[in-house]
Image (cartoon, rainbow, N blue to C red; front, side, top):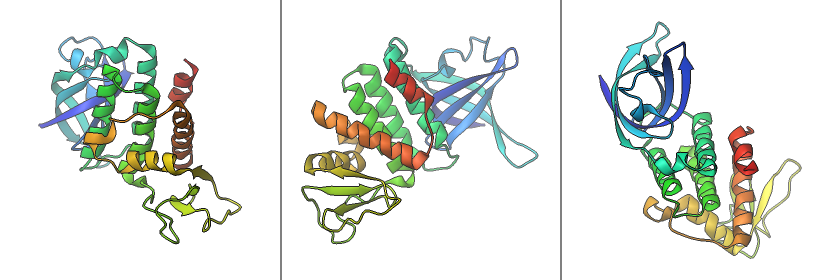
Length: 250
């Protein structure tokens, strides 16, 4: 028997009474857990709802192909994030966060920083103490950073200049270049940073979690940051996310 703490990202009905939930955990990454009678039973109902954080006691069973299937034995609710489900805009953003995680899912150990990012994001989405659009940008950019796509933002990749009035971020190389060193190539995609936008992007990519969610920016730079983080996701994930379209349409 294995005991995990996880956040429910997705629910899927199986047959007339059972369901499967996709869960992000610190210990195993993203896994699917089969819940017998999960659609009708009240025993685990509250602790296996969408967007709740729970302790999950599961049985591991090895399939003929060598994969591990997980079956829920018991569960206990830790935190429900109730305000998310009371507001359609917050629900849509939580669904977008979940879709990003599920798209980039891995089953592995050492997922603690991703789990921390997810729980902190859900906390601030629930309590409303951070601007929702800024929270979206923080999650959009920091998630790829935590799964191995963190760009080189220390300085110009060629001359190592720390900052300039214009710095070019090349999505193809995932690197930063100063205005003098940057050479536009036929297949290159870029975003030009001024000093302020560069500072904001570095802050999101490199800050400790204790500081990550405690800052504000102007509407002007919010617009620029949104364009950059959405472009970063679009380039590296190469997928159109329906939940993002829905969130932006509300």
